[in-house]
Length: 471
Image (cartoon, rainbow, N blue to C red; front, side):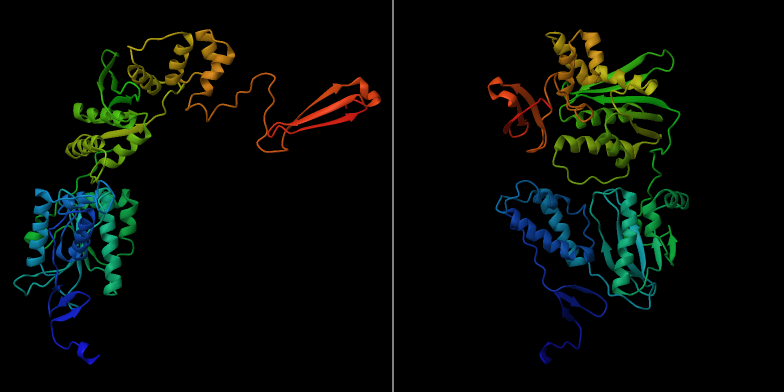
C-alpha cells in the first residue's frame, strides 16, 4: 500500500526506529512487575532482543538469570531483589543513553575482544576520526558462559566474521586481541580452535586498540596458562576421597626423610566433591610447582579446564563454592602445575601406585568394627579389589565365599565371568535355545524302555519320548 511507503527518516522497520546515522527500538517498555517465572521469562526475552545493540553483558544480567532457576512451574512465584533491581536500572540506562550507529560503507569494520573480569565479549565497530565521538558501535557479541576464556575468544572471532559475511558480504578489516605478541604466538601454536577461528583471515591483527575509554577500560590482557602440558620436576602430591567416610586426603612423600606426610579433612557431599575439596586444599597449601595425581577422572577434567574459565550457574551450592574457590586459586597462582589421572587399586609396581595406595588407606574408617572374616574380606575387597585366590589365602575363606564377594562388587562385575555352581547347567536366554536331557529306564515299555526326557531351561517346557537305546 502507498501509505506504508516511508521516504524520509526516521524509518520504522520490524520494531526499530532507523535514523540517518543511528537507530533504536520504537517502544521498549521494561516491566518491573515480576510475580511468576512466566513474567521473568518475558522480561528477559525482551532484554535479550536488544542486548546485542546496547552492550548489556551476561555479567549485568546475572542476577536476572537467577530468576529462571528453581521450580519449573510457570506460575511459581518470583520477586526482584536488590541486585535484580540494580540490573534492571542498568538496562534502563542503556536503553536511554546508548544508540547503535548505522554502518558506514566507506569506513573499515573492526573487531575488538574485550576482557573484563567476569567474561570476555566482543564489539564490532567503526572509527571515524573526523567526528567528535569517533567510536561508531555497530553490534555487541556475547556468548554463553560455560567455556574457557580462550575458547570464548576463538568463538568471538568466528561469530562476528560470520555475521559480517551475512550482513555486509565482507570480512573484518582489523581485529584487536587482549594479548601480547608472545602470548598470541603461543596461543596460535597450542589452540586448535584459535587456528580455525583465524583461518584465511585477510585483515590485520593488533593488540593496541584506539584510544577510547570504552575500549581501554575492558581491554585486559590474558595471562599465559600455568597448567603444564608435560610432567614437571616438582613436588608430587596424591589426593583421594571416600564416599563412605567422606575423608578428603592429601598425601606426599618428604624428600629429605622419605616418610609419608598427610592432611585429612572430612567434607560433606558426593565422592566427587570430597576429592575436589582435596585438590582445592592442595592449591591453597602449596604455592610452588606441583605434580598433582588424582584417581578421579571427573576431578582431573575439572582442573584441566578450570583455569581462566567462567563458571556457569551450578544448582549444587556446595559444588559451586568449591569450583569458585578453585578458579580463584588458579587465576591467582604464579607457579606451574601438572595434573595426572591414575587408576585406583592398581597392582602395578612403582612410586605412583604406592602413593595412591597410601592415600587409599587414609580414607578407611578406623572406627569400623569387623564382625567376622567374611566382613573383613568384603571390606578389604571394596578398597583393593583382590581376586578370589587372594581372599581365600589371606582370610581362609572357601572358594564359593570368595567368589560370592567378588560377584556382588559393582566395580568387578564388568570384568568377572558368570559364577555358576557345580552341577548347575546354564539357562537359556530365550525359548527353545538350551535343552537339558536325561534318560530314564522304564522296563514296562519292553524294548522301548529307554525314556528320553528333555526340558527347555528357559521356559520349563518338558518333552518325553520312548527309544530303544540311550543314544
